[in-house]
Length: 262
Image 1 (cartoon, rainbow, N blue to C red):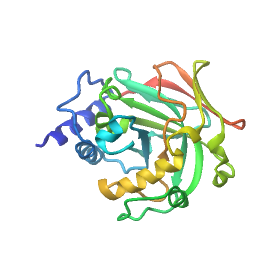
Image 2: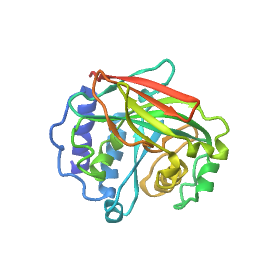
Image 3: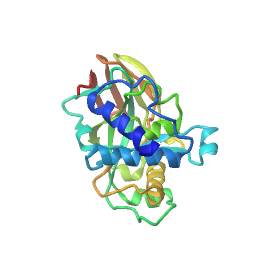
């Protein structure tokens, strides 16, 4: 049995049993290629079809070292819920957990599996809806973020939930990129920002993912969601807390956090 499969088995077992992993379960991957190999094994072991993909930022100087400024991980159907009524989202109490305010892009047309570069306009043309939402990031391994991007990729990109809010009206004019976005935890603002200030924005995340699909064997299909990146940042959250995200003047969603069970 290879190391990639052993690590994938350890993460999948911990997720299914809702228990923590105090240490990384093997030799941490040094490259993104090694990390995505672990992820592919874990997807096969998990046994659900992929219903979406989270995209996260790789900051300098690791973006240069690793050869990418973003990373991706799968989102499964059982982890996707509607924002109304406000849901209770499970996280790994012995691991890492965070709430992130994000724009969720729905794939309308599958990308060309051989195409390895997309402009922002080409990426936007493959999207058929944009919604507001939360990504709930959580991993059984508490060091999932501090271990670096390759460690994050190896455990489903640190995803454990997606809260889908209302569709953004008139999103094709892209004015939503200038909206003020804020996220609060237990009534205290944890961060605020605009999507326009995120690298090349949500459609840049889609362009990255579509290109990645051609090199890392990602199965992108119409109807899948793209969680396009934490607009206000990655905000750690604990069991028992609640979060509210506000998008511009018209959209507000909320969720509360519980401990995952086996």
